[in-house]
Length: 123
Image 1 (tube, rainbow, N blue to C red):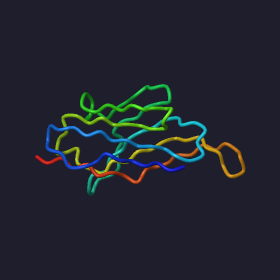
Image 2: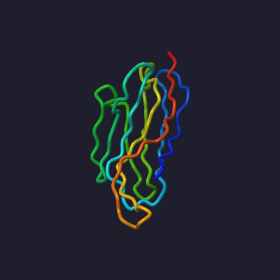
Image 3: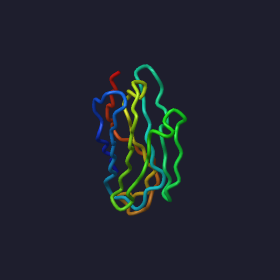
């Protein structure tokens, strides 16, 4: 299983970006999906999460500005980021709890991370 994130870039404060993360591989089902970010010198933090049934939760710092969504048919999670602030600058990582087929054919459940996409917000 691999997670591939895209959509990062450089944007001015007040602007918007939309991140996407596609899961691929021998996937049976994806449970929770989430976005984290990590700023230089800081720990990785949860930004937003979404369950398989669409329930969401957000970090206080992004409530009202960011929206997480998913397309289960495409094994994809999105993060719409509006009203971006310089303090949103970070590498953004997607994560997913995936039930997949092992080489033996058994189903296994594991957590996976994408490689990260840089978001830079200029003031």
